[in-house]
Each structure stands twice: as structure tokens, then as C-alpha cells.
Amino acid sequence: MYLIKLLDIYTFGLFIYCVLSFIHSVPFVASISKVLDIFYKPLLDLIGNLIKPIGAGGVGLDLSPFALFIILEIIRRILINVFR
Image (cartoon, rainbow, N blue to C red):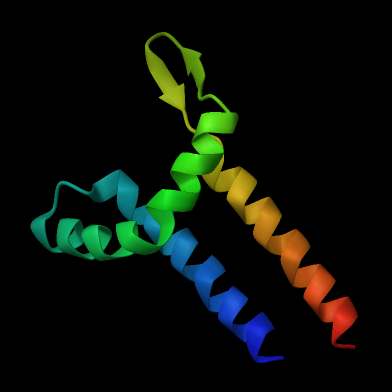
């Protein structure tokens, strides 16, 4: 049960990390992003090596956060079924 709550907190943190990535130029936000980088950057880089960004007109859309959300949800559902 605690694993599921921990996974929920991690997933919520990933959401915050994604939102803050759009406004990282604000100094306060940049400092929070550096802390969150410790938790999310390694996994996102690993997934990013497997799934390349979609590019159009010189702008790339990184799909690794979406993939990580899906992976976390799959793990969450497996844990719910195991601990039911």
C-alpha cells in the first residue's frame, strides 16, 4: 500500500517537473528544477535514448515524460492487483 502512495507522489512530482520545465528561466523555479532533476533526469534520459523526440520545423517534442507516465501507471496497476 505504501509503495502505491510513494509511486503516486513520484508521479505527481513528475507532473510538477514537466510543468516547471516550461518556466525554468525564473530563478526560484530553476532551483526547484535542479532538485527535481536528481529524481527524474536519469529515467527521462534513459527513455529519451530509446524514444527520439518528434521534430517539426526545428522544434522537438520530447515524448519521454509521456512514456514515463505510462510506465508508472502500468507499475501502479500491477501493484494494486498484487496487493488487492
